[in-house]
Image 1 (cartoon, protein in one colour):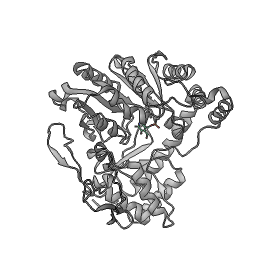
Image 2 (cartoon, rainbow, N blue to C red):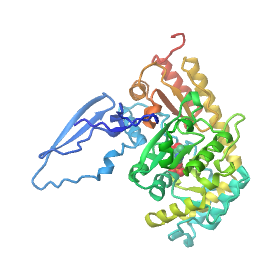
Image 3 (cartoon, rainbow, N blue to C red):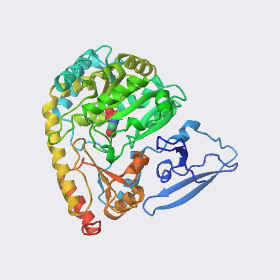
Image 4 (cartoon, rainbow, N blue to C red):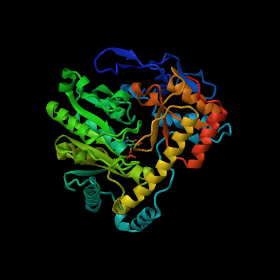
Length: 457
Ligand SMILES: Cc1ncc(COP(=O)(O)O)c(C=O)c1O
């Protein structure tokens, strides 16, 4: 059975349903209603780009397990899918260069690892950790915000540690949103916002991020009735996947809009100190009134090369923090104490390391942008994050088949923009998480495979 999902039209002006082309890439082909006697597993082989079916007969002792209905609305997680695609190509002996997931390639700094090791040797740290975070970690977060953004945070009620901001943000709607209430979500966006919105039974309304509007949502285009029913709004700057930045004026506008319609803002900011050229780090919480309407999610993952450590935090509005904390303490545990001690070390010496990494990412950005432009690709220079967001260079081609073709022909893995939402179609994302040498090799491979557009109008 071919499965396609019907979703609301991403254009906020219209409530029409549309079939989202290309979503079978992420949703897979599924048998939603199993026929009496068989289970059909549909397989999409990315190497041959062919679909096939495995039919498994039900025996007399066969017990069919059906997943919960809400799970049918979940896609395969984008990066799981990309990993599978990569594995298929690697199994043929190809040296794949992955510019897919934004996972820093350099290791965690040794002094942070050493602090983990010290704290892990102390048996006092082997117990269940506190849910909210140890006071020393919460204080270090407050000091980091004061030093870098001049933002005052009360480490008690205004900060909560999280086992990864992905999980924290995914759970936020369950703590704040009732079924049928509206969540405003950027499109394209980091895919991990989706599960929480679905599980909460929210009505998802997408806010298109378009180049002509500097990849910022246009609040003027949100219909009044939708704004009135909205309860939560996700924002994310510097943005994943686009690398776009926000301005203080934009955040001020968002706060005014949120106040008017009583909407909670969840600003997702794991890249807010990853800036290039003359761009200054900016926190949503710096803007007057931010704490009245929202919170900011932050993470040790990207700035300190600690993605695998699962150590993040949220700060700002105390009512939002209290609701999320209540939920999390019921369903989860806190962060392993030695990891929190290591994170304190990272935050205390943070700026020097962050500046060093920014220099490295900026060099890589320049290598890739220069190289692609020489091939005739149209690429803007991102001012922040470690992502480059660029249009598919062949007009009219969709991003998923184009990215798969490049993977198969060159062994270079790019993320198709469609995986981030409807308005990601027509774009590709590059993560600058491989060395400059490897990026030069990417350019060589693309040139050799004929992805050259110079002089072709
Ligand atoms: C925009 C954005 N938010 C959050 C995360 C997740 O961060 P964490 O490692 O804290 O879960 C990512 C990771 O890719 C991201 O890009």
